[in-house]
Image (cartoon, rainbow, N blue to C red; front, side, top):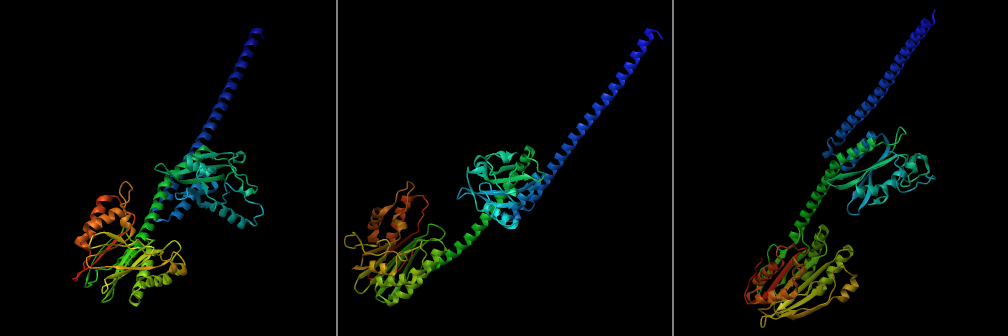
Length: 494
């Protein structure tokens, strides 16, 4: 073989080898590329399945959400939060508006406390898990406190993939409470933070990813509306119960006031009562003791609830039981206090004014248990005379102190004079500028109409006071009584 032929043969062999090498390399490249694409496709398919599963879970969370109790709804939300993120434990903290604290309202799994270390000496796995759950549920966060408070305060989610090396995360000594990875997301409704969902430790031991955080936040956003309306429904149910109680209290209160004023020969009586709210705390009564004596009572209970109405009902019953047996207003008030004070709550009391009109002697005897001082507009000069007497409210002190402080006073009450008794809602009526109507304006209104009798006096007081307060809502009940001795028989109620 010539040198030229040998070289040609070697070149052909080299070319063939290179060609085969290129073919093998290209095949390997194509294989690895295909394999990589397949793995990418598998991962995308898995993520797609997770997303579809999440959408399904969200639908499950809110199925019949309007019909379930708020506590059960929170447990359902938390169940799907763990399922979606593959977390081993979690908790939902809700913001209590009154205290501005975040309280754990739902806990699932063994959720480690986020601001308290659990001691190892807690005995037994069952007792330990209960102890841990108790710690979580009884240890609220303030806004801005810890990770939970921070998320609620800022409204921004938090993902800590390596929690064991993060100083913000509590480091527990007990193995099953160690936090490897944690996510916290806010629950928001119309820019208002309702609470925080937090989950810890993926069950596969891996760290949480941004995808997990996005899914958890999406679930929290969807759940927030349902949780808000469930709480609103709970509030509406509570309002209905309160309305029922108020209706009952209003019926009790209404039954205490006279449906009509009694016809008493020799005196004219006019009365006005207006509660500031659905149920009032004022009470008045006119009691015909005999043909020569009439009792006038007016009272104000500190509570405006059912308890206040019931307290006033007892007061009325004792008054009506005691009034026929004594012509001493002070003695009647002492009897009322002795009966009522043992059962009056510490935050409640009753102010009361009791007056006996002596028709035969043309006098009135007045006793005042912490109530506003009555006054008489004299017939001869229309001057106002305030009737001074000492006394403290019923239920305010012990019996001995109450009885020692109470006194009574007797003053003339002649035909044409006008006796005025009232509750503090009259003189303390407020204008839009926050100014009280006051006693001077009240006296002036009474003085201007005294010559025209009780009905006109009350009409004039109401008209002037109405002009003063305008449309300003009043926060106290108003009761006003006007009584005048006459030479004729007359009685009228307004």
